[in-house]
Amino acid sequence: MTAHISQYDTIIIGAGGAGLMCAAVAGQRGRSVLLIDHADKPGKKILISGGGRCNFTNLQAIPERFLSANRHFMKSALSRYDQHDFIAMVDRHGIAWHEKTLGQLFCDGSAKQIVAMLMDECPDDRVTLSLGAAIRDIRHSDGRFTVDYGDTTVTAASLVIATGGPSIPKMGATGFAYDVARQFGLKVVEPRPALVPLTLGGEDVLFRELSGVSAPVIARCGKTAFREAALFTHKGLSGPAILQISSYWRKGDAVQIDFLPDSAEDWLISAKQEHPRQHLPGLLGQHLPQRLSDALCGRLSERTAPLGECKDAQLRDWQRQLSDWRFVPNGSEGYAKAEVTAGGVSTAELSSKTMEAKKVSSLYFIGEGVDVTGWLGGYNFQWAWSSGWAAGQVV
Image 1 (spheres, rainbow, N blue to C red):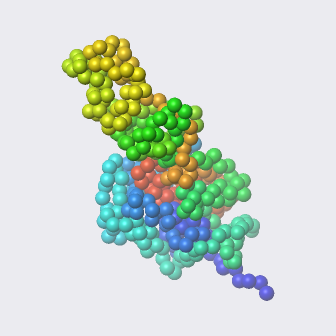
Image 2: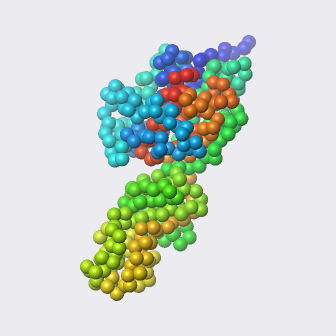
Image 3: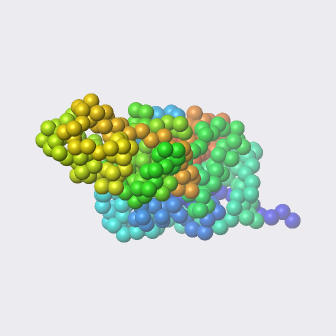
């Protein structure tokens, strides 16, 4: 006797932000949707984000603030369902929110409200949620996808992969999306941890002694720069400026730090003229935490002399180093501490309008598993909403 195989219009694997959004949109279009996740509850990354308050989007979520091998790919989805569309949904559900810094929007209450909202958007009679069972196999024949999970087999006309990337493995994150892409002959841009603390070794290891010290800086890597706080840790460098620049950093690259972004030209020479008896550590300590000031001065000069006894050329050299201090990280803290994954399913394989695979009809990839990575501060959630909406319109 053959076991009954349930049939759906769409199967979505991954009940995170992108998968929930896609299920809601498709369900509202009258499609029968099965949403599968191996976790015990939906939206687990949403629940821990923003310190439990969910930085659910950013007012500045423009395409230029996303990384991808194809910098134009994300424009279609982000323009057709943007941050204001998502804010309107949040408002419609009566969820109070506030703007923090740099356009970042957070719930006043709890991230649980965002998950509940997305679940409420899924019509009960159209969307079925299945939790706690791992995918065993995916097959495609005669225009239908067959998925084995747990002890169940289901089929559908379309399949959406919304399982994210391998960042934060303790949440159950894996490279499943990449495995499925390769199974169907799609290219994958090499994944790497992004929005991740960087580690220091060699001579720079001395800076680990400053663990817990932070300062507002400009962090640069190549042509990209971010002005935010940097934090020294017992392993190296973190803080918003470093997390941002980490997405652009590759092993062997230097990270350049301007410790005094507001200083005027020749400010040390001016200080020498005004306060010739002052020493550099005391002067720097007026602008930076004293422990950091002492550490930097210790690397700049073995002796401390009053500024009045220092040659102008020496002062200019110190000033140059303080505005362009070069660290060469020996690595990052990896997927365990990465907020997101850069790289992923190649955008060359997908339609930018629908997120459908060009080679495999009715197979879709959305969210973090795609080679689109946003800045820190709600951008990656906006990509989840936008890409999930785009696929939900057509599955």
